[in-house]
Length: 473
Ligand code: HEM
Image (cartoon, rainbow, N blue to C red; front, side, top):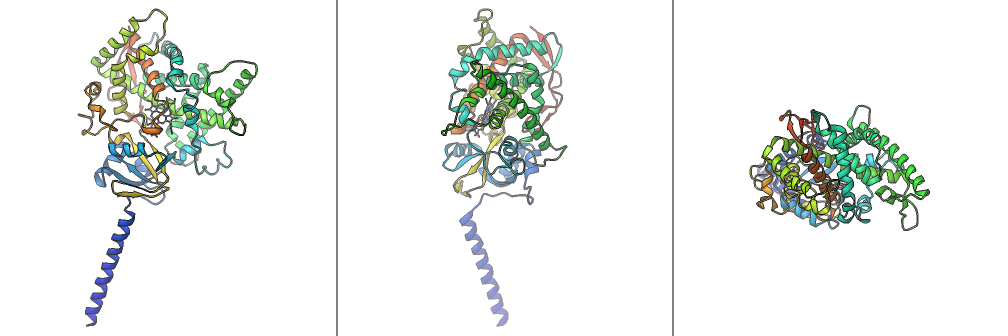
């Protein structure tokens, strides 16, 4: 009898516990997945595995729509696929606010008190207002800058490639990009200053997604040192600008705008804050454009038929211009095939993998609940290489953008979407097209090592800098 009573008790207890856990599960129903190891979670796999593998493996194992993980110190839900992109881009401010991972907050917020000791809890969300509101990146403003883009690109090609047989594409892509950005954001034209900055920008870009270990020898430490060096340089640029403006010089760049604007109480922006904001913009516009130009050189170099088609398009534009005339808006609109080639390059080597958000209010997606305070990550790698959306996805094939195949909504989002779409999209388009125009006008090239290793996923870098053999035309 006692045995029977005990068995009954155990069964009842087990059923109660099972029922309770099912009930608790139903109530919270967090996304499937794993938070990995204590403290570091799955940060190592995220940073050092291939991004599409990190995401792809977990989509297969847990759910193609959403999974949980812990990366860069945060409980994170990764929202996947076109529906995930759509959900995220359509619910900004309702469920999501922008969030920068802690290493980024730390590197870019030095002017805040105590920032050296602790990263600030929240990033002010106004960098992009500076860009979006005064309309610096609107087509009207960019049209005025087109001639300068064209000139700077020509000068850089002339200075670094003229008369040479074998050159490296990656370093040139970086200096062209930085020269353009320095001119555009700061009205700065000094090539030595720009050359000094290149390595610092590389270090920051890599350090933005790294483990926050601020001791000599680490990626994060290098990034902070680089940020300090750039800040010093920018502070001296700001002083020069102020002096020039005080003596009546007219300035039209973003940095000068930041110097003169005031907040509602009439206070000017502190110099250190201006420096950090400009640094943020330079970083956002630097590695993305430089990476795209570099890999475009690689894929076009490896595909002579694509080269011939781009050259035909660009030479028709060149032929329509008088000697000494620069590229204009109408010319850019004609570069349709070249743009398809750029798109295909960005699909195969995404200049930016994805970004984070903070969850403002608990929400449910694909049957799972994501609590307030968690972070959400979206990434192009959940769609870019998926054969469901891109036939033969490993193949470099710009013609895929001609037959509508790549137009399925939310499958191809290199610049994000919705209200937070990259504000530099049009600037990037013009800068890269201007480079393409000039490079095919003057050169043909061969990639010397088609199998050259590519390091790093956050800033894909050809190990040897992409050596190419040039043929001057
Ligand atoms: C090929 C070039 C580029 C690509 C592929 C790219 C891609 C992206 C992506 C995917 C985002 C994140 C959108 C999101 O969070 O949903 C972003 C944000 C941003 N991009 Fe770009 N970008 C490029 C060039 C540029 C340039 C040239 C600039 C500056 C002139 C720039 C400035 C920014 C800024 C400031 C943000 C943050 C926007 C925000 O948080 O609201 N980007 N970009």
